[in-house]
Length: 90
Image 1: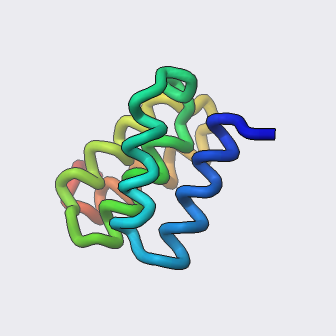
Image 2: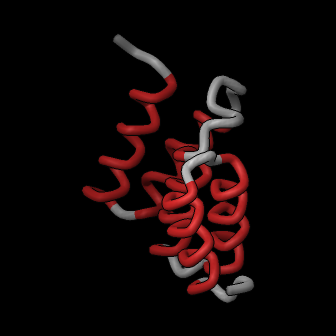
């Protein structure tokens, strides 16, 4: 069944197969809907795609946003460490 989460998973798969820019293109379509606005995996995925594309400052912002959305402390720690690698605060 089609759903925003399935679309996000598709973007991740495309990013792995065809590069981060391909994933970012698909995420733009998902970003236009508000269904995943507060879903931490969306900005986390975008942060990963941007990181792999070498766009570290943008990646940092998305990793920090994902960390702010999650309630899981381990996930939050992981995302903040990813942000720090991008040049964010430790």
